[in-house]
Length: 70
Image 1 (tube, one colour):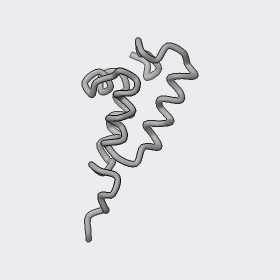
Image 2: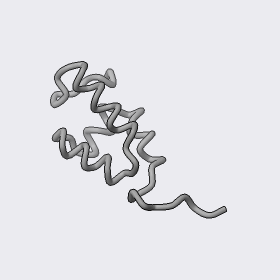
Image 3: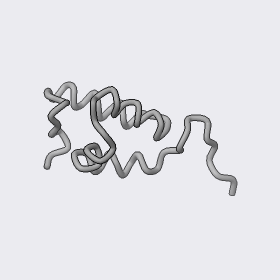
Image 4: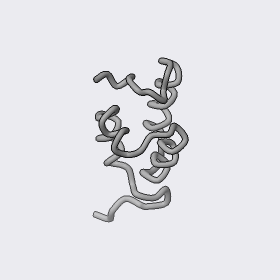
């Protein structure tokens, strides 16, 4: 399935804007809010956008979460 495929993201422009918003999210909480705005649950997001889902895993859980101390 193509990363652009989504029932709720009808046009290429909407899909591109969605992807850019996900890529620039500061936290997983922000991503969840974006998914909610687009009527997507986490399972559908992971299935339809596997590369974006992998990227989200590297985000901190909350916006103010600092990187772990070394």
